[in-house]
Image (cartoon, rainbow, N blue to C red; front, side, top):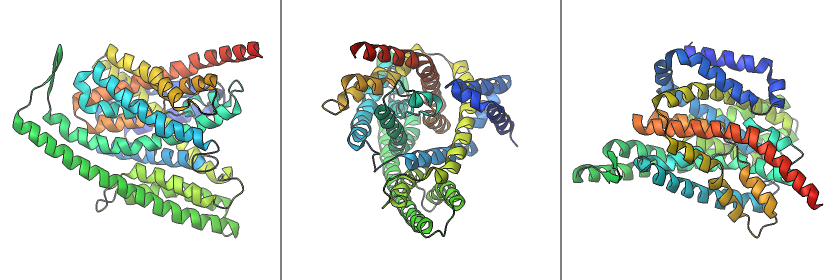
Length: 429
């Protein structure tokens, strides 16, 4: 067994022994795994860098992402967009695209040499994940409605970002080596006409390969999720399938969907297929039910396996953080991470919810509460694995600073702000 895997499993075991106490402390659990990851890789960072920059790690990370996206899609309560359909639709169909565009532009302005991967940086920096800051969704300082909206939004935005990420990454991989950047006051591109033409041809080819791969993934996810959800609903209604069988089905479905999608003859996007399968499975499994919610007894296994794999990803972040900071520290990346965690989320969220049923104060709360976690780490590791060294290092540093910044912001600052909001609301009453 590779040392990285052995140390990672040991770190997660240690976390499990004190998990209840750590859950009460919020971000302490992910932070502890991050520290353990750093402590067990500091002795040989080059070996760790080679380990995470390998085809095997890429596949492992993709499978983990598939499980997490499937679990997110199946846990949403209510209809397609949850019980707060109009508000959630505004957040994921208006606020998220605006935030992606603004973050891409900010990346280009701050780091013009990263223009080829600016869109990938946005995809890495923006997906929210309340798993490392679950106490924010449990605190009574937040109205129940806001907690529900945030929970549904976090279940969707990483899944909606993943197709865009899957299309942009192969394009960047083929274009980046052909376009060499030099930054001297302002950006200039030192490429010949032939290289530029070749880069354009490769980019078009990558695009027309990536788009069908994404569409094929959507089709595979819809078919498998729809069929299995339909069969499971009738099997449970007729007492043919047990709760245990339903749990096994929900764990195996994303793995099978991913496996079929990445068959060489199909070569589709496996984690997009798993996310779509989760969406359609939930819709068909709960069709006709008074409450459109999959019973928690059926969700339990995929939730726990998802938590286990997510903890391993947090362990990997510790070594990735050391690796990123050992390569370089760029103040521009720090500024971009802070913007992505604050203004570049708050602004689009506030604008998208104008003239909605959400009050101004609640818009600000929703905009300020956007923890980053496993999806950001996984997207960052996939980009680091696929991209050339220079661009991969930039994305890795963005990923590390965004997640570490989120731990500080949502583990320390957000609770303080919520207490102040609570006192202000009490004073108004």
